[in-house]
Image (cartoon, rainbow, N blue to C red; front, side):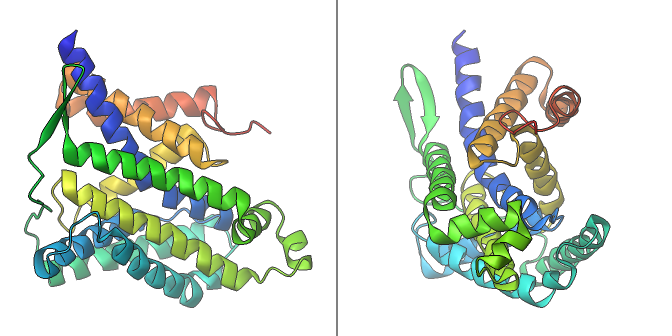
Length: 287
């Protein structure tokens, strides 16, 4: 029983990190109708920005997340404004091709610039643990999970209670009506994609504190983010939290009872099951 509780705790911590990884993908997909196949590559790029901020500037990885997010927002705004706006609201196949091309380019550019060596962000407190009801909780994983959930809830509040957030939701629901109320779609699309990449950059910085990074992690992270967005639903960030926690728990239980090699089989098996039983996701609207 102690082992099971420890595994469940680890799954919850991992699920919180998964949630922030998928939030940017879900935001871009829900508003722009773009399934961003380069999402994992942007998470990887955010992880490297955080690593260099820590290794070269001595900036704490958690305190350096705003810097990473701002840089990634600027990159996302430029990419959407200069490239993806050309195919906004186009057939999904076009955006899949473009974002897949971006993923390939970013991966091989990262290999050239950063090399293929594995790197981790190891602050002085990376090996510390705390004891909670007999469970051993790594401080870094707890902080990463807590910050990921805070960012996800902050995005939910932003979309609900700010003028820009309401404009983003209106554009996603009814573009002609949003235009009639003064929304400029090209700028709003670029801001939305920039926010998605800012979240991806923050997720990359958090990911680098709990796992190794290299230029090739992008494809796996894109697949997991896609699965989380589908499992939780695209209608609300709370669905992304639910999807991340479900995926984290499923992977933890699969590793315990079936072995680490079966974690992906279990997680994507759950994805198929959700698509069959509830295609809109756990918290998505069925209409």
